[in-house]
Length: 350
Ligand SMILES: [Zn+2]
Picture 1 (cartoon, rainbow, N blue to C red):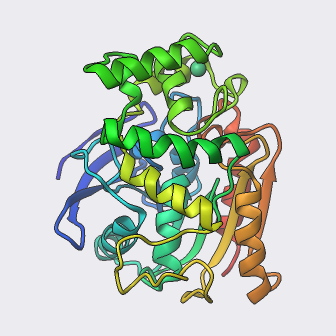
Picture 2: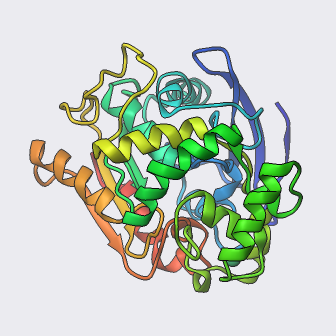
């Protein structure tokens, strides 16, 4: 464990390693402000092919800043999809069963608090939702999910791509990697990069264009360009790397089924896990960018409605106008447009 200054705001961070249930080495970043936290721990969980740092874009106020200033004790989980760790052919099941429960146990042990709040994004969200509804993270009573949770819904073109392109690409490469935009090694990497350059004209940042290709069919897919400052658009070149085809294969099955489908056969995750009554009394808050071109806002609406049928008036859904997928967190005005909503939901009693 090391402690070192990590931001101009005078925050310090330390890396807290932990082992997943199957022995894989993962870690948590614990970011502290100058003051002792006055509130309990909050964990932030990143999506596929990025890392914990995705919540710390070069904007004037990140979500981490906002949470610390509001008194929270902030933890960022590098689960097995993190590009800070060894690339591996992960599935949502592995993360749900092996990673998130151990991360939460580690935070409980380190802080002495027996409750943790969670802010979960994209595949950090789908996998954590599986943990939650399977009853594997009972210490988490409030979960704020962005983009997608139990019911992934994408555009027709993205559905076709998942159905027809994923099996073909799976035979050519075990990983897609937006870093090919900086350096494409090998025939498949060069061919895909050329294809993306020929078809994506929305900006000159090849990593940005490859990220759009990797995660959907938008131009771009993961943000509205106008919501990013130029520094963030440059910074993201180093925040996207390898994502395994095992994930896209699982997602293709989920899209066909209309809800998350476990693929590993773990006893903790029965086949109908996404449809059966959740084994948790956590309150869920669903966020969806109205302009999300990766997962349509309908994704979050479906999970919200399913959970609300079982417990009316308990959960919340916020569709945020003018925002897409990741600009919810890294948009230059997210501190004004999105974070107050998150802070207000965190403060509500469960
Ligand atoms: Zn771009």
